[in-house]
Image: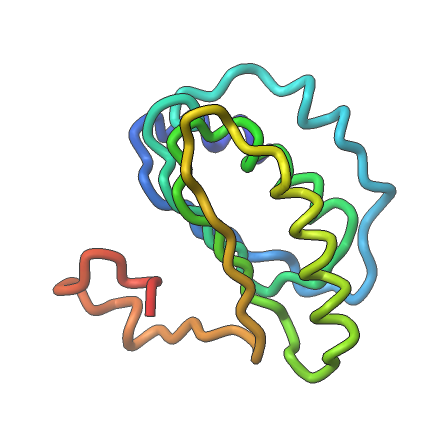
Length: 138
C-alpha cells in the first residue's frame, strides 16, 4: 500500500510515517516486496527527508527504511524516532542495524540518518500550527 500511496504524491519533499501500535510484527519481513514495487516519482526527484516515528526495530520496518534509503535519489536526512527510549541495549542494536541499512550510499548523494529516543514527540497543538514550514518537525 505504501508504494501506491507515495505514487499519489510525486512532489513530496518530507515524508512522515508512523509504525502501527502492535507489540508484535505482522508476518515475516520481505525485502523482495519492496524490490517489486514500481518506480515512484518522488523517490527519484523530490523526497529529501523521511521521519519514521514509533519505530520498534522490526524487520519489516528496516525493510521499508532500506527501500527508501536505496531509492530516494535526493534524500538528505532519515530520522528514526524510537517508540521507547528506555532500553540502552535495544537502542544500540537498532543503531547498529540502521548503520548496516544506511551503509550503501547513492553516488553523488550526501545523506545522513539520525536516531532519536524517548518516545513520540508528536503533539497536535504544535502540528496544527500553520505558521511552521513543517508542523511535524520539532
